[in-house]
Length: 369
Image (cartoon, rainbow, N blue to C red):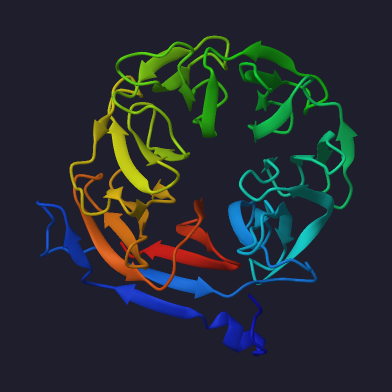
């Protein structure tokens, strides 16, 4: 998507809409105290990319400096698309492709992580079927090659500071490995995870405490899907089954604290959405009782809480083609629904606002009180 030829002042004066009375969702929604927030759409473009990428998972290390996965899937032919890493230094108005970093396939773009405006890491499988791992200490001006964990493909990266980080390695016909580094990715320690395979990104509150979704090593009558939790930086894991569920197409989650978390499961090739919550650190999960934005024909790409009580989730009705922003002010007990002109892909908190990617654009949400 290209940006119109507008003046700088006009480009800055983006659409800002105050939502004062969204429709209620849930049997106990408080209509007398409606959710108040503003939404703003920022138009973006990919400069000299050559491919019409869309923004996926992203990180803004400052309000102007950001990095994102760029994904492109052709609607024609049998190709698997392309993916890359994109960089912006003007708050998302323009993006540029990171040179050399491009891989076949849009579904699993190159994993990356930045801990600040200087220190970052990226990994990708090139066309030559070689797995690359590189790091930068100057905000992407220069990159240096790292050996990376052996015997597999780096599927996810997460760093906690300039030295300490983790990754998960996918291996053909073998259990995935959890890897950790204390020297900025130069060396890694590896350990098999007690699962057959895993889905989506792991979520870590800090270097010690984290969760991921996986398939049990042995099939069980209560379902094969479950949650792994570690409280010792991956040295050991506890397993909590998710009853009934056998597999997932994608997962998305958010944690308020060590006890309270939310989990979106996308099932049956992304055609069924389920929203779950836990109040005991992931040992048990309960289904969100409101079915209006779940089930068949629903797609939920993201959920984020900006405080313990105030949170936002997103829902696409694939049958009607409509898109909705769901908001809660009571910690997820009830949700209110507001229409959106288009759907989003990924969301992150940036300062006091929640930012979400949508094509090459950004949606910005600010809670008023």
